[in-house]
Length: 200
Image 1 (cartoon, rainbow, N blue to C red):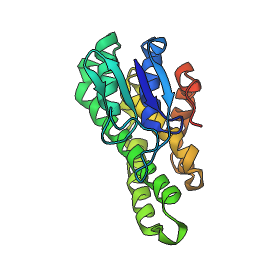
Image 2: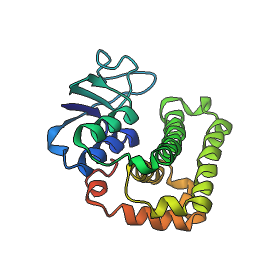
Image 3: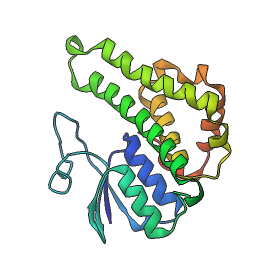
């Protein structure tokens, strides 16, 4: 299989960590490409007409996208336990929350990197950050069950999201107001799968 990816993409990282965690990283060739919402660049639009990453080619079901579809394929194909049946909907909800943090953070990045400075909307970026910070606050105050649960796809997604905040939006200093999340993030960052996939 071939995974079209970018080392800065938190969504692509989530998928690659998934392959690592089920001991199947050798089954996939990671191909790094560049693109954005304005210019798809060398993203394989014939495989994924949305021109988005990640895109997984060569599965028994053809080409797969987006990250949630791919990680569910990984879990099913390798019986990986990433989506525990005993807490499936809680896991899916937390994965969706983490993916939402990624969405907002990536949109902020595109606003700064794709638009010229005179056309950037500070109010719009602040609105995206409000979504992120509200989500972090919810995790900080109500995340005890999540932090103590067995490792699953939601942990992968949140770990990828938090590292992306450090990578692209360190000026927002999310860690200072979220000590529990900060401690959890430092712990999960020591997993071999996370060390091997740090954003770049």
